[in-house]
Length: 99
Image (cartoon, rainbow, N blue to C red; front, side):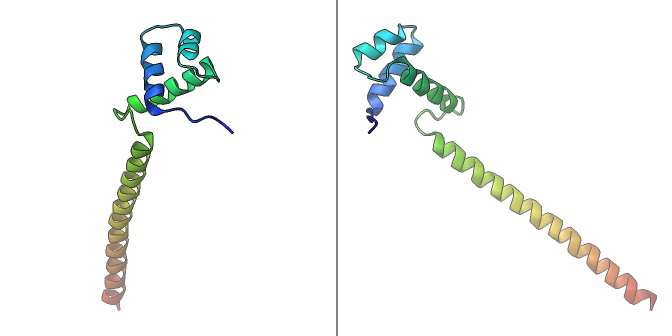
């Protein structure tokens, strides 16, 4: 079963890695059995989240973007639906007018 590391330990490892400390030394000092590879994974994950200015929760960013996308698509759909209904009404009016 994989070991679950404390969030504070992850943050400390990332900070030390960002400050240029040797990654193998960090892993040894913090007793991270998976070693440098795990710290690099944590760092890449942190870097991705940091670019969105949400360093704690990437999931929050993904959920927000999905929600905005759905809302935008719904608004776009509503507008196109209105246009379609207007065109249908115009066609019906023209047909009735020609008769």
